[in-house]
Length: 350
Image 1 (cartoon, one colour):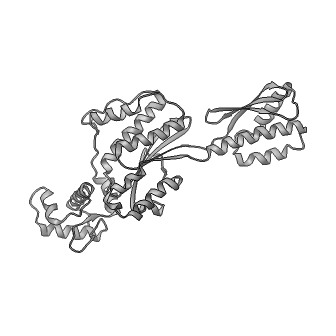
Image 2 (cartoon, rainbow, N blue to C red):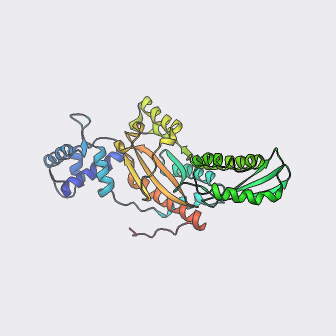
Image 3 (cartoon, rainbow, N blue to C red):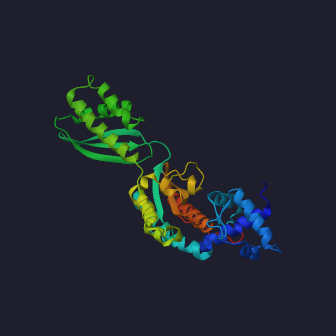
């Protein structure tokens, strides 16, 4: 069965009407929205075809049609018109981002909160490394006979340090040699390999050296382990209850609990595309099978990527969410990279 342009036009009308009203649409109402004169009987035939093809569903025998997950997917991929942001929307986004940048973690959490106010759907935010972080260099600095400072430079250019006390005195003149030992054996490897490397050196160095090396390697391993866990921040989960699809309190609470208690399982982009949309059953987690997720990525720098996700019913206003989220993510990338906001979008630009 061929998916004609008229069928696509009817599907577009049904999707956009359902997004606006959350009510099924009948043939008579569709005919009124179609250009030209098309009979209700013709519309009913087309609706029946779209139903057989899996793009529409009929909740009840006498009811109109609503989109299926397959119908939403076709709409997002082919039929959805790009929605340009108004100057007021651009200004609101830019204003929300003004101010000093502090720690990345704080900015990521705040970005999720700001996105929630822009799209009026529950959101989540996270940051992760595009590649595994390792130690790039060690340096041990003397303080006194009983302590030293361990400086650890990570492969993403961050530098961490910690004051360490030692039980056995170590001559300050020995620290450069131990730094060399650390840089020779404990750089550019994952945390899980560090202990084995350390055990391999146990019979090659004197006890006081081994104890010191153990302290530094343990500290470096903790830094790498912390980076291996992506922290996720959620905002506005309770907004789920404002949508007609989630009037069932158990259904609403199930999704809310998932966003709060299992937020680490929320989707992350599987490609380098700046935006990705998952509709209904396309989501891996059962808790999201009746929801849609729109994700946008932005560049934090230092080989790190930020993520903002929007969770809502499959009846989500994809065009508006995609437009606002895309502009917001672009603004964050520009802000992290150049400390400036993107230029205003000119009318008529695609």
